Amino acid sequence: MPASKKERVFSGIQPSGNVHIGNYLGAIKRWVDEQDRFDNIFCIVDLHAITVPQDPKTLRNKIREVAALLLAAGINPQHSPVFVQSHISAHAELAWILNCITPMGWMERMIQYKEKSSANKERVSVGLFDYPALMAADILLYRTDLVPVGEDQQQHVELARDIAQRFNNTYGETFVLPKAVVPAQSSRIMGLDNPAKKMSKSSGGAKHAVSLLDSPKIIRAKIMSAATDSRNEIRFDATRPGIYNLLLIYEQFSARKRADIEREFSGKGYAELKNALADLLIRHLEPLQARYKELRSDERTIESIVRESAERIRPLAEKTLQTVKEKMGLG
Ligand code: ATP
Ligand code: LTN
Image (tube, rainbow, N blue to C red; front, side, top):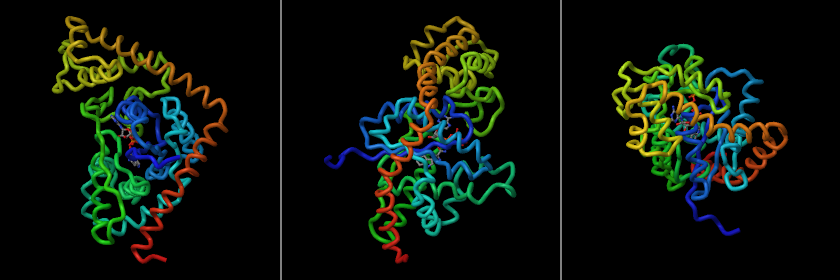
């Protein structure tokens, strides 16, 4: 096969918590929609997941769940390898090396760490602080050009670029400088129970997020109880975060124009919008859930897909690591 001329895309998702519609709109759907244009690699980042405590059995199951969800959403593993981060040890090894060339001050500026550690600074792990160095290793090992992520990850990708630049300046051209690709329209989906907080897998109450595997009944219950205001006027207005968030979700799942959506709901109440949104989500998630069930009915399929994916890309990761070691005088 001739060498691919397409740009390399790399992205990752944590096997922690339940994958939700924020992950889908901010990341997975875009990976699927754009997969033919690029030379992709998708990673289930289990080493990132253990930066906070995980139950071993649950973690092992979640890794397979997320792999099956990516395939059910439409990733074609023949074209776009889907692998598990801990299956390729070069990730942890390069992360250590990058640690040693990254100034503390750069790491201390990371907003996600500040947010996640603010409640409990004494207890959070060193790994949580160092999370972006491992993410930089993920990206840089595969000579990545583009990193499609939600807006919350943009700062981490920029850090990876800065680390790569610093390495290149010190040891000579080695790494490709990666670029984050975040959605043009704001697609940071907020929590249904609290539209001031981003929808997240690892925090929030029972009505916080719609998961991709929620039943129709649960999807409707969560949407119907979403926090809104008392204005009862349906318009895309970012100063009214609850209703704006529901409209954003509606817009992205329906792929319709804002003006068109506002026209449809003009003069109608919030309950009507919520019901229509629940219908839309149920309709979209049903086929994905059916494919997911089928994939999980035979665990060997998923296992062999993630193992083969790792075998295919391992030489690339090892080559980069070897070059880095040589340039630094290691070994
Ligand atoms: P956690 O809460 O455990 O940090 P998470 O929900 O942020 O998890 P990740 O696995 O960290 O999920 O992220 C997977 C992808 O989903 C990333 O590209 C991230 O930017 C994107 N993403 C996460 N949350 C949202 C959101 N609320 N809206 C849009 N995109 C999101
Ligand atoms: N930190 C990312 C997950 C992630 C990632 C990556 C994304 C780990 N390594 C490399 C893109 C590229 C997150 O979504 N929370």
